[in-house]
Amino acid sequence: MEEILAGLPLSPAVTWGYPSQEALINYRGPEEDTFPTYSCAAILDGTIPREWLKGKIVLIGSTALGLYDHYPTPFSASFPGLYFHANVIDNLWAGDFLAPSSPFFTLFWILFFGLLAGVAVPRVTAWVGALSAGAIAAGFWTAGYFLMVKKLYYMELVAPTISLLGCYVAAFFYRFIVEQREKAGIKRAFGVYVNPHVVDQIAKNPEGLKLGGEQREMTVMFSDVAGFTTISENLSPQELVHLLNLYLTAMTDTIMKFDGTVDKYEGDAIMAFWGAPLVQPSHARQACLAVLENRDRLRQLNEELSKKGLRNLDARCGLNTGPMNVGNMGSNQKFNYTVMGDSVNLASRLEGANKQYGTNLMVSESTYAQAKDDIEVRELDLLRVKGKEKPIKVFELVCRKGGLSEAQKKGVALYDEALALYRKRDFKKALARLEAVLSVLPGDKPAETYIRRAKDYIDTPPPANWDGVFVMTTK
Image 1 (cartoon, rainbow, N blue to C red):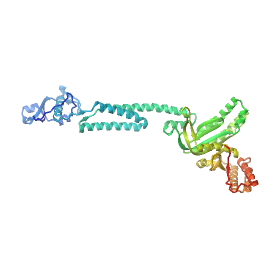
Image 2: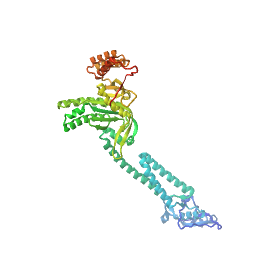
Image 3: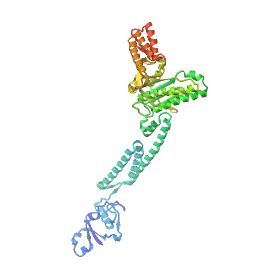
Image 4: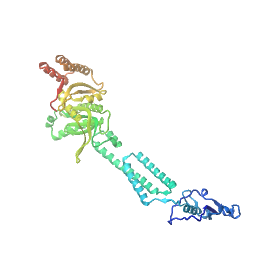
């Protein structure tokens, strides 16, 4: 079907053209909405007055599909070729071809989006990265559409978008591979120190593990076997190693059971802490329950040692809760995940202070304050350890909450009365109460300790400024 397409009025006073043999066509819109179109037959038979064509540029051509003169455009997949010519002439007339962007401008966006994805993706979560990449791509295409429609400026959108999304996908998979390796490394590093399910939590949430050192409130434990040097002198190296392995394995299993982290072994001594590498709100409680169960495990171990004809072991333990530094500490060549600080040193002092009272489990006031709903204790003393001016209140850790026998309840009540009288300088009445404690709890070491002190103070009263504080002169 032959049609006549009439365009804009022609003015001989206007000069127009385009300086290049190639141009980006600024399409006016769909074919039926842009240029007036008439049938040649309608013009020839007079249905359309010829005066309508006066003063206009007229294009004659075919629009029928069967003639294969159709091509894709932004507005249609099948656009008559005649309309291409009409749009080109109209662009020439108006001087508004689309202005293409510079290849360097396109290259800039390709490199920028690639670097942006490579730098940002490893630092955000997967969801944030995906949403951000999608939002940036959508914003880029929106800006390109606006510039083309409003400013007649054509930007290359596909290549920069491919760069953005391609680099995002590559960075995402690289991060996935690296994280899997890091998780495997974390599991290997901490699997020998802490409970396996704590390792799983660290692997799932590596952000909770801050390496390099940070201050955190935690609970630390020091334990040591009494008289181990004497024991080791009577054993062969093989027997000594076997005994140590039995003891350390039993103690370590319990520490891990209660989510503790084994810091180090020093011969028969064990250092462990709670509250890292992951935050544990109930670290003091977990530590107290662990050492109580270890006391029971040691009794079972001693039964096995007795059957083998070996000497029984007697372990002392000190617990303290407070602020301390935790992290990888050491040198560039060798470091250890450990804790440091005054609170750590105090726990070590408490372990040694057990010797003064004949006890096995000593906890500080700060530890007791956080775990008091789950444990039974009795106050031992106001203690000023070596290197410290301020005295602290220390307690013997007796058992789990509600685990006191009737004899223990009566003995602890008498002991508390005696301690109050002792601090009031009424040493004779305190002595009588302490002797009553021994009648209920024969061989009670803290009571025997205070009996010796009371007798000494009865013979030689303390000075007027005596404050009841016991000063430790050794570690």
